[in-house]
Image (cartoon, rainbow, N blue to C red; front, top):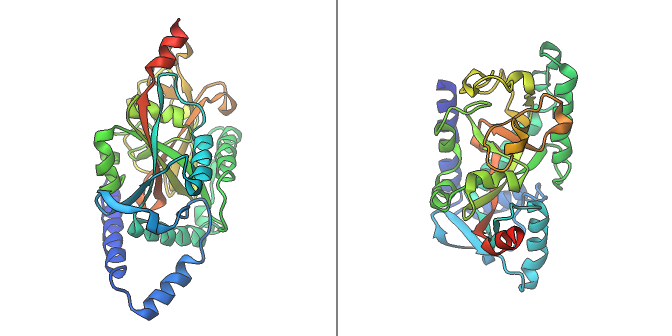
Length: 315
C-alpha cells in the first residue's frame, strides 16, 4: 500500500514538472520539444489539429465534439464506432468527444520510452514456470498481445486500446485529476488498481445507460495473466488470490479474461470471473493497471438511454 502511494506521488510530481516546462518555452526548448514529439506516431497521437480543441469544458483538458457531417471528423468518428462495436440494447451513443491534456500526453510518451527500455530486460520477462497451469496463462497473454496488435503505431512497446465506464458526474473529476483515485475506491477483485476492459459493452456495466465511456491507450510492459484458479467460482471475492493487493511481484499490470459465473444471469450479474473451461470461453476481459503513467485517455463517448429500441424488442 505504501509503495502504491509513493508511485502515485511520483507520478503527480512528474506531471507538475512537465506542465511547468510547457509554459513559455525558449526557441531552443521549442526545437527540442518538436524533435521529441516527432518520434511518436500512432493511434495514441492526437488525430486532429490541436487548434480544433478548446479548453472550455474540463479543467486542464481541451476537447472537441466530433460531428459526422464535418469532413475532418467523419473518418475518426467511424473508426471510434468500430472500436465501440456492439452496445447493450437499452443504450446508444449521444455524442463523442476528442480530449487532450498536453501534460499527461508528454507524461505518457516519457513512460513509453521507459517501458521500451525495460521490455527486453530479464527482470521484466514473465516467469510463468513458477506459476500453476503455465499453458493456460500463456493463452491469456496471447489474447492480450492480439489486442495490442490492433493499435497502430511506430514504436516497439506494446500498447492496448481499452475502455473505462463512469457516470457523467464523475467524468470531469477523472479527466481533471486522473484515474489514480479510482484505485482507492474499493479493494479490487484482481488487485487494488485502476480497471479497464477492451469491450465497450462490458464497460457500460459501470457507466450505466446514460453515463460515459472513456477510451484510453495503455502501455503494457509485463502483464500477469490471471486464470480461474486465482479466482475460483465457488469462493467469495475476498478469497481471490489478488483481492485488495498491489501488483504481483514486479508485474506492471494484471490481465483477466472473464465470463459470468451464472450464464443465465448474464444481463444483470456483476460476478464475472475467469472461466473454469478456459480462456477461449471468456466473453469479456479486464486489465488492472497499477500506475497512472501507463494510461492515456483520448476519447469520451457520452451515452443515452435508448428506450425505443427496448420497446421494439419487447413488442
